[in-house]
Length: 158
Image (tube, rainbow, N blue to C red):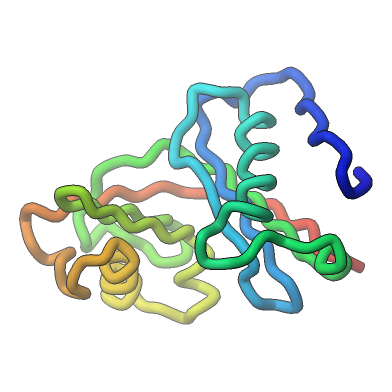
């Protein structure tokens, strides 16, 4: 796809209901990551839209520039449906984590804990921090924990 071309339509198929995140890395550094935890749309549409959003709409980064495409690593995480969990059930590296309380929510993908070398307590604390909550909010009964798993597909440049 050349610069300025329309984003192609995904192929028809199954996968509705699955959430997906698209993560972009440039020279090993995160350059964008956006996703949906669940979706009623076909998986191909979700992945396409999240790839575009990760490239231009992640509020932590300026929009991706054409000259950054060379050397860009693309990672797609296709998610299982999130389910409630207790802190002791969270397995870093296997589970992604959602922490919710009131209007606050934080999400970290399963691979984040592995990449960072985090144990369970650190993973829980960092997800709370991402939600804008105190690091130990996961210990409070009013904080909701959900876990999911992800099939990770990487397209790394040669």
